[in-house]
Length: 102
Image (cartoon, rainbow, N blue to C red; front, top):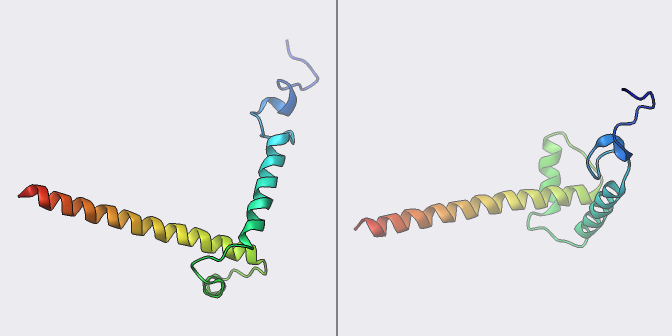
């Protein structure tokens, strides 16, 4: 039998914790994001802000918020670090393979 109340299984409409319903999960995520963005102001990324702003501007993106610029700089730094790490691992494997071949 269907109820006319539209009850979907309790609070949050039957969704998992932190999804919909405005539970504590969403508040914790927002608080963590605000805290992370505030720490970006104290962090000096390897890639200068001016360089990031230049390339963001060339792509048509303009944002006066320095935290967003630093977030892009950190993401770019992570991307380049991952490429360098993968390259090093590849070179080590090639070296080991060539040493074991003999």
